[in-house]
Image 1: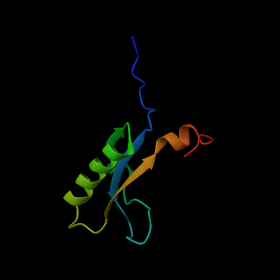
Image 2: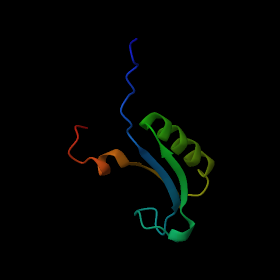
Image 3: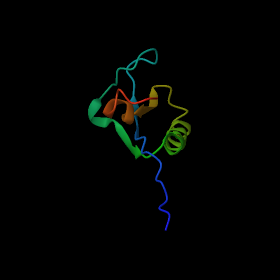
Length: 79
């Protein structure tokens, strides 16, 4: 019986919040950060990021980010 090879988990964090100034990345209130979630691959993280970004498009100070957690967990791994 052949075992299916699972793709490597490439964890990504999606979060956002209100910025103090749109030209930087300093958040107005860290206690109000919106932690959208941790995702197993970039594609699903990007979909979540896009949905949140589009939902807050009318608020110029709201910004969402995708963080490549797998790069923090394994910094020496090939990218």
